[in-house]
Image (tube, rainbow, N blue to C red; front, side):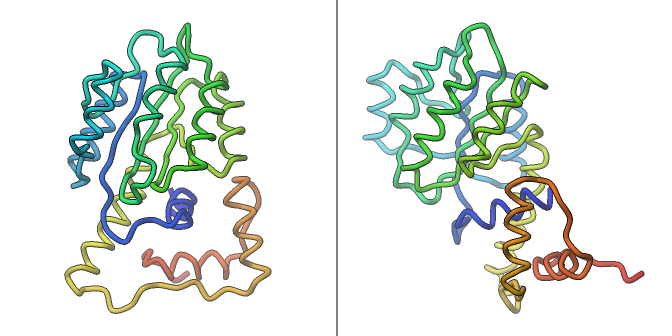
Length: 219
């Protein structure tokens, strides 16, 4: 959860709480994800009339989550991505996918990476499927896209950010935390976040945790 939190904060997280939208081919997990977001106070994305017209033109009834239907042909994902507003920094877009008969996850991963090059919001990809999703996950991470197998970890990190924003809005936060770390440590941390491998020195780990308000126990 801590690495996911760092990734979210490193992706220019919006100054206000974002609107959320889920695109999926996994019915049950996507409903749980959407409900979980709603339960924790995250607003569902509401398209304007022009955006709704684009969905209607593709014969897609807009709802959240957006269901890819059937076996989730990559072409349908491409059609949906084409009508998602690109210049919407307040949009937190989840793409939740599982392997199915016509679901070529590597093709979809390349579509998602191409979309993310132009997308101004925050994109989170949630892939469920054990060993069958290993290669797409590696590909997306190499493209610096936030990827998680467990949506619960994403939600937990988002809730921490939401609580911080609410405190900030209420005037209960006296300062905005900044990381005061030497350049060598910054490069080390960046490498660890990208690879999910390696270690931080205890002093570096404590400094990061303290900067973001995590409770620390003296031992």
